[in-house]
Image (tube, rainbow, N blue to C red; front, side, top):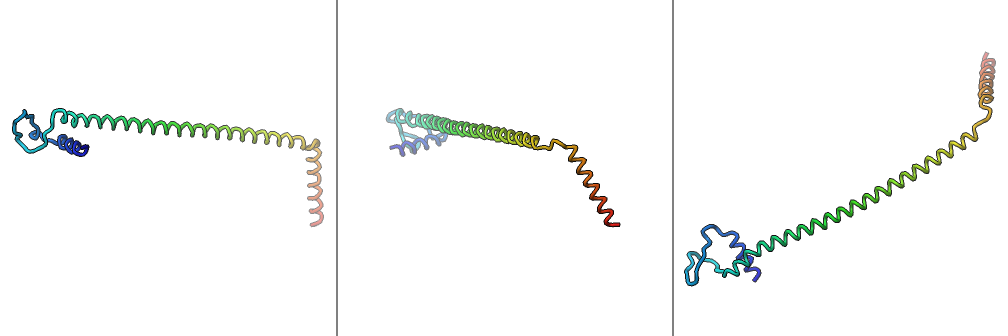
Length: 137
């Protein structure tokens, strides 16, 4: 039954201007075709509107589903980004604290007699140079 209605619907939808006429009971049709009662004609013609409305609803539903999935993925990516930024900030903070600690250790271990070591190094360097110069002459 549905296939017949679909066939009728397609044929009515493709009808040319001269392929449609209204008949009274007992009148002979001017061309060969399918005769429908007014109720059947209304059903066939309204089925197009019904199918179009169903299609529009299905399209709207699928778009809503896709939009919701997209929104969820976007929120998950934002959460991941925030987590990675927090992790990065935490690592930077740890590295800064480690660097500060190493600077403190280096400052504590630096020699108290900087000038003494500088003068001693210069004197030792001069003595070595003088010794090498005397040995080569």
